[in-house]
Image 1 (cartoon, one colour):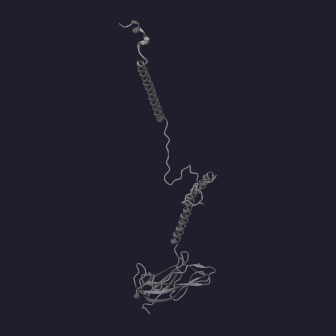
Image 2 (cartoon, rainbow, N blue to C red):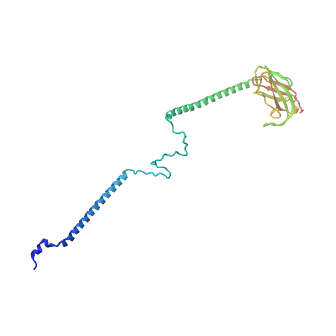
Image 3 (cartoon, rainbow, N blue to C red):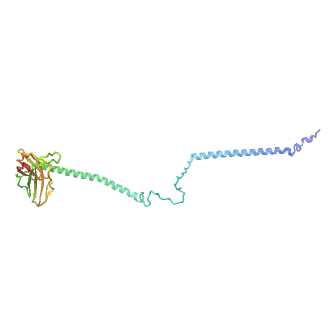
Length: 284
């Protein structure tokens, strides 16, 4: 029979070999709990850090990092900046120099003043031209309204002193077969003659406005002036003490030259020189 004291003695509850496994298990369990706690704390920290980062990203713009293109020097390069090959080294700057900004308004104001004055000058010049044209038209109208006197007719071979110090004469005349030269001209029988103007005044005499008209036949029909077959124009002036001549051609039927009248009109304010007589009827 067993000893009752041996059963109730706590010292004899187990041997050291029997209690060792229980102590090791408790240590392992404590280590597992510690690792689990550390892992839990680590995950919580990571989650809170990520949430803070997301909030910061939403409230603060992310800076843009520019990547330099290939062959482009970085701003941090230590080497000196190379000049642009397309721009000359000594090319003048297009930027306004100091003080130009202040001078620019004055230049613009002067240009504006010039532009404003230009139309006024043009209008003034146009007004003067219009006034001169009106005066010239009035003068021409007045002269046209004046009945020009016709000097005493002379024969075809006599001079006509139609104005003081000025004499006109028909220096030569011949019958020709004229050619049509200008628009509307008709070739055929014609008279070619020369008018000579002699100036015995003390100053030059203008012949710019000189006109010659020819009438023929008993009805004083007007002859048609031709511009070819040797015809010339009057010179602009005839100097003092000199004479000037011009050749004229008029179409006149050969059988109607018994009565020919030549009228030389130097200008509207001067009398008209008149020559009358029979002209050559046949060529040669």
